[in-house]
Length: 154
Figure 1: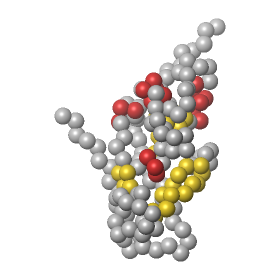
Figure 2: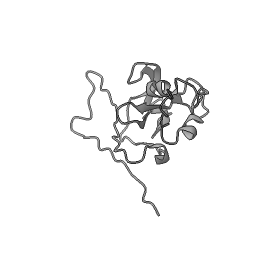
Figure 3: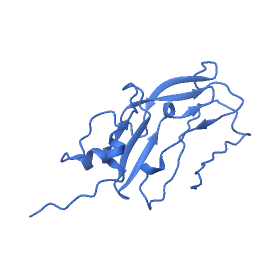
């Protein structure tokens, strides 16, 4: 009996080129690897994990986590305003670098992401993970507004 042909995720070969390890698109356990996730480091040091890619099991769609070092944070490299430390990622798999806000008068965080890596026809959710320390203040009377800008096609 022949094995059923498994449909590979959208734009997989281009995404795997950005992987931090040589994931073989023809290997037998590829789908299991992709459901667990692979880290994309865009040719940075192994400790600089910026993006995690995985395939959502229910939707069979590409999914991504963009970590703090993969974002453009205003004054992010100034130790007067930000402290960089490590915490477990959202799935508790690895330690990722996180940005701890020390003192700023405005918050400006941005990232450009290639929409070509998103699965066509799938509705995506953009989420920001923020943590507050006990006793911290400043956001109670000053709401944070987040904006997603989608470029207009010519």
